[in-house]
Image 1 (cartoon, rainbow, N blue to C red):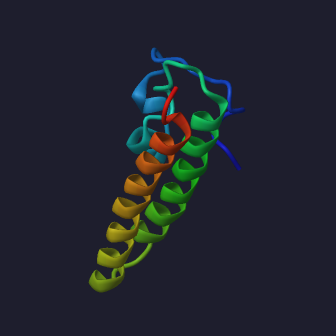
Image 2 (spheres, one colour; image 1 turned 90 degrees about the vertical axis):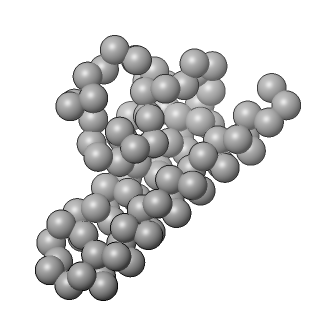
Length: 89
């Protein structure tokens, strides 16, 4: 479930009110208010939150490492996806 309706763009939303994933992908930063950017960021924030929740519930160091890598790669994919949908605008 997305963190917002795809239209939300409030840079004065306090960071502490955002989920971990929301903070990592910068869900409130969308100066063009592009609905594709908002949807991509919300989706990746949800993915990162799921991975982070799993990471916080395990004591297995290797599993934590895999989840940390997955979170980093999700951040990277989100940035490339935003670049792709805003290319040439």
